[in-house]
Length: 233
Length: 374
Image (cartoon, rainbow over all chains, first blue to last red; front, side):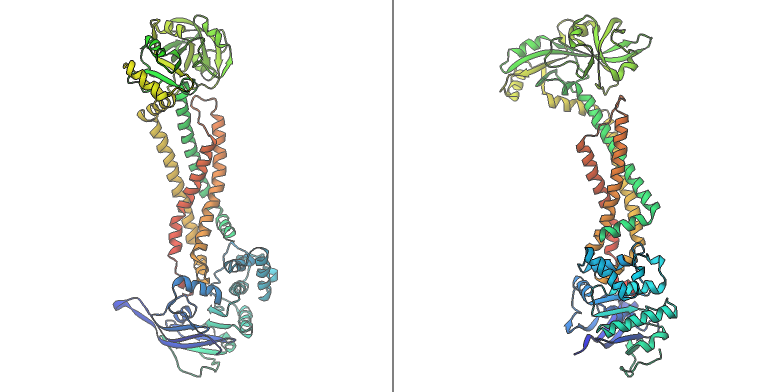
């Protein structure tokens, strides 16, 4: 089986009583190793909730999620935290870098979390920045980098623990087309290395880069050819 | 890595860092000076007892403080000498008197009279003159700290005590009084003359014990045989004297309350600035949580931040306190800074800063990593 993530009948309800809102209404989804999956849909369609559940940040109200065959929906918060550290890399629209740390130090924080410290951590942080083409910006602070460079630092940070799954939320939304293309190129490369990449996006520029598009609406996956990289939102 | 993040968080906003450090320094200086003054005053109230070599003090019933003695018949000394276990008994007289300066004007003083051949008491830290000179009629020894206040500057100066001529035969260094009436040392014979007391009057009887004697047994024996007196072990009398001045007069409470205020101000400032710094960094902390950082990793950053601020603030503060203590060495109210107080202040400062971090930690505890994808 090539699926690294497999969600079945995922449901999620925010709140209780009359104000309760069902964000996911029974979504089944698979993410395979080596593919870039694009999650599309209008605001409120449930794609961010799905991304949170797939990343172990949010426990579904109902349904099962398996990571590499292991059921993870019943895990407690600490276990989910350890799971995220080991298996997932996260990339955010606003980069979420420590503004007071250099690019290399931002990556080194993630390495520190998985126990790679000292000179080994410093070297690996620079290697990871090299992988995203930022060797010459390792000692720059986020404020001294362009948006695209910051996002590449965030990607290098996401790769620190050598995760099997990379989850990205609107990673190109704040980038110009040139920077966006570079970032998408990096995601493509990560998938080619065998990682699963899930990207929530509204950015039409990157639709061609996905292996598969999952379109959502009103908390449900809209039926379609799951294997065709459709170029419409 | 947490240390680096903590330091950068602190150093990033210089104004906030300065406010934090000013708060901690203020707190350390206030606590240090108030506690130092408390110790200094405490020492001043017990100096006469601490520097005497008596094992026991025989005092008139009801006496609480060494400075406020009442007459005690010297016959009690002879009665005490008859009790087994007592090696030596000496009369000791302390009495307020009026000092007339050579240039005019008067001051209140405390005359302290001891036998010229005393083994148990008398002036200490003698810088000028000889103890034997106290045998000269009207001879007195004063402390350099109060020389200006008393209008004298050298051996040989003459003054009046209770309208009797007195001559300076020596100076001591660093003998302070809590009452602001300087101690003036003389022989017990001179003291009796100055205050017009009969030759059989003392204020206290200082007792030393024979080797191996049990102080409690001797104390009980004296109190049984001489019911008009109370017996204090030297340490107990020192504590009673110190407690009397520091707590019954309110001086001690005001110093302690000031020190507590310093602590409170420090906690409030550190808590406020640390909290503001944590709020600024919430997205980063949420990101770390989302990445899988355990909660203790985030607490470590905040506590290290507090620890670094404490270390810098304490270092500056304790230097300021030391400078103030050195500067006040010649003043009549001298704060003290023994090593244990410096160490204690350090522990208190770190506890204060780490305690102030609790509010920030509670904020971080409440972070939901889900928020990073909203």
